[in-house]
Length: 303
Image 1 (cartoon, rainbow, N blue to C red):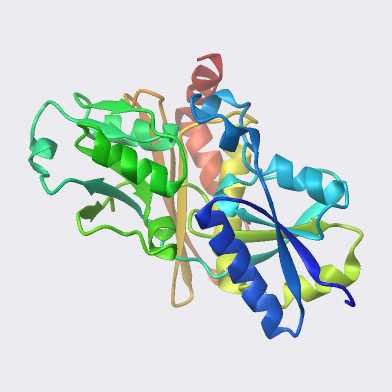
Image 2 (cartoon, one colour; image 1 turned 60 degrees about the vertical axis):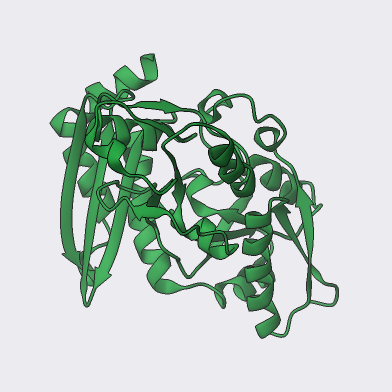
């Protein structure tokens, strides 16, 4: 390409880190690029819970619109935020190597509240709320919005016991604090820790370029997780977790649906060889739906 590739990105520190990671990989291919930062409505309005912005695609639509309008050539997304179906005319072409998919609890040096009936934990994710309430039913949660720096500052400024973050986000911008604990029991969001790069479907030369920066193992695993999400979500924002890992030649998937208040969960664990893993997410979703997931999803939609 003769002119620099225009990379669409949100303007948070974490989003810019992700876009610059894609930019570095393109440079390794001998290609120049420049960042074009944009803001989504959810970035501008931090007072409303995320699930009030109309379901999936909260943070990604503004970048998709910029692609469709020709304002940018490619868009870089946190893949967990991207809908399972790209808008007409667009496609996700590359998935960059995944970082940690783990959720962590950032606290203030005192974890004794985990053994007590009273506790107050902050998060803006209904998936995290549902799983926390399932494990700690007497604890309270409070909404938390804003970029990573803002959320850490709010935790410091308020009498909360802790707040839940994605470990990858804090690590990427060197803000992982001393006081945190990994929530190994919490099932992460599908594709958490992965970065997606998309473009227009008609840009065949660009698609070929982007395939060169794709990380095949990450693409496989997050594809399985997103298959599970696509099959169960039914177009609504719901507390859904899915995490796939590769161990030698075997892919293992743990996934589930949680009631909004944490009172119910339907989980599944399935494994398959890499060669037989193509439909692993779909099969897991069918199992969850048949174990009561359809009724639970309908209850969530009604709520």
